[in-house]
View (cartoon, helix red, strand yellow):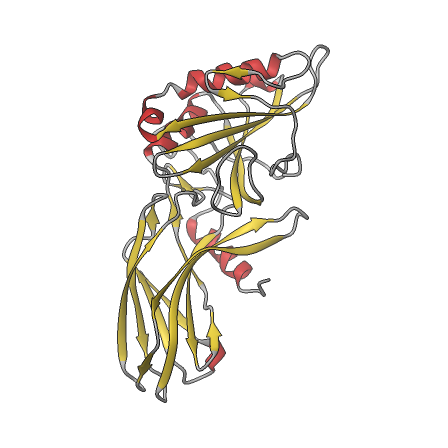
Length: 319
């Protein structure tokens, strides 16, 4: 698939660039491959560099939203591009292990906006171009966890990226993903919603849960956090449905303070502000996630509509 980029910064008659992705769907820790195809303009050009970057839409602590570049690689240094001449630059761009998921079981996660940007510098003028859509799909270890939410009857609400860091979890990127769910009926009396975060590395991942607990006659309200560190191998063989349901059942019915409680590797915390921003998300939930199948429309949009919005968003000014 070819995505045309005309260098706006250079005006009419300048070089043009086509970025051709051979695989626009990739796992965290995988590699995006393709070619940057250039055609010289009306006059010879001295190209300073060609760079590729992954860009995502991130919510800041002040509730504003901005594009954030979280991975970048220069794929070509200085060279001359004669008028009308074609040049092809093959590339392989490693995807960070902590890259946020944008697609689950074949369906785009509503709220996620992520793409590949081609940046070209000519005569000290830099054009960052538009974004080519990229889909980050779960690793088998992550699918095992997501499938358990579907089996338990959770309904997908939304997903977003939050600027900041999670307390107690080694983290490379300056943001983390929250995938939000409405609880099933048998948990809804004690919990209003659950947020899931993966912090992934080559050897394994941290599975972080945030449950918004309802206040009751014998229970205090507020957010309760669970954290589970596991290798990718073990994650694929873990009974996540039983683990998650047991932990959430305890959260929904726990009395008094929750500090220091542990259950099967999860460590629950009282409400803390260490990198979390809870309680300010809205919007209706649509569809659901079911293990191994795309059952329903998770995001309520088709891919083309999603990236029409992405293009509009990233077309604006960046900080």
